[in-house]
Length: 569
Image (cartoon, rainbow, N blue to C red; front, side):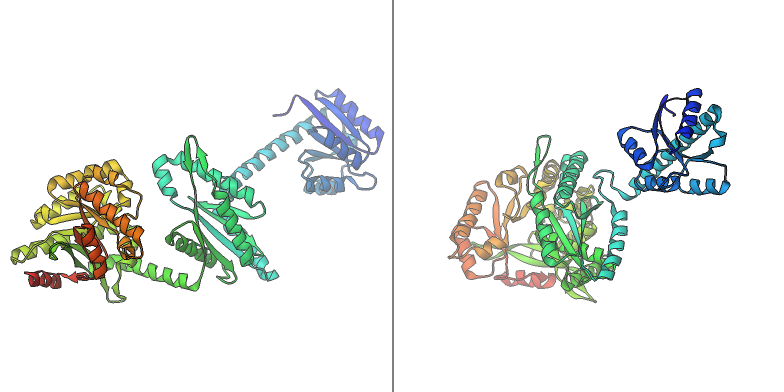
């Protein structure tokens, strides 16, 4: 839309020509304020002092001609429609000035009020149309290259920028650093407090990063992942930037009445040491970040070849997991639970093992976590429960000694919507009495969805299945929380047992306190990882009920375990 009142600047060294244009404007229906300048510099001064809507420039100015002035205005970003004035209607000049960015041109001999009015209207409408197109392109560009939540560059722009900087670094023989930043436990925050809180935190993190690192290229890669690119980066400079990131995240983030303390896991890949192509560098920075996360979070790791080998092995194992179950490569081992008073086996824990034709015996420390991350733990856990029940039924049919078997359930299994129906259908299918089974859950799982878990565990106890809290003491729970789940047994984590020596009286006191409090609440206590007579003697003295560990027996295949049971009879 054209404004009701315009401000028009005329730059022409000939005062008579200026007056001709002014008279024509005054005689037209255009309402305007008119500014005059005899040369380029005077015109530029007026542009700074006034909001100008349209400019007439004489093609033949002294010194710098009108074409030069036009080009200078374009370079300086003066986005105002310009009409070039010429002494005659030379088409060559017309083409030249239009290419240079003029909106139109006009021969001074043709100036009349009516012609000038039409020319101005056309130029202003053309300018408005161009501005709309430019704004639309700018919006499209922002959508394509910038994150709408944080306004940071997005993954696409980051990739293009890295590719450009890699070429420059190659030519100048310089180094680069890619810093991959992932916010610790962000999913938990989103799930607990909602996405509006999560979005606010991401905006706050982004603002702190931009303020602390104004000279660095920062991008949001998606979710809670950010990337920082350092140019001409030494290891020392990179570490300084990483420590700056850790420092700026330390102060509390406040959203309404909520207080959040944020930490990050950071992975770093250097060019050219850790790759000379963008894909390699991004992958290696990502790998290093996951290593930092798996190392306890709130730390940073540089990529190393060892990390790369470990990742390749993990990926290979992940690909082999599902076929392994179909190929009967998994089996259950059973570790005895022993009464400290009698020294007899009173139960067993079913532990899954993987014997791979390709890798040999794969430790659960390697594949259980991969199963958790991929969701395969649901299928594997169902197989473990079903196999343990089938094993109990076999022993019953052979009239062999029977002891209760404990089966571990991961948090993903516990909160799976079909977990209860799976347990019930397995018991019905195998014909095993529920009181021969115990479900072990980790202490940390007890905090994830307390109301749902409380209801689930009560259902299991009503069926006759016992409940044990595994790895007690390593999470954030308390005996008060344990009581509300109506569990039967606490398992003291092996880390406490290993440290409970005569030289470590504080750990002994802690173990003793757990045992006393649990027993006062009517719970049975079992100690994990007992490997020495000294540890057993300590547990006897403290009144612990049961123990597991290599002192009595390592986990055994089913037939070897039953032979152990028969020998004690």
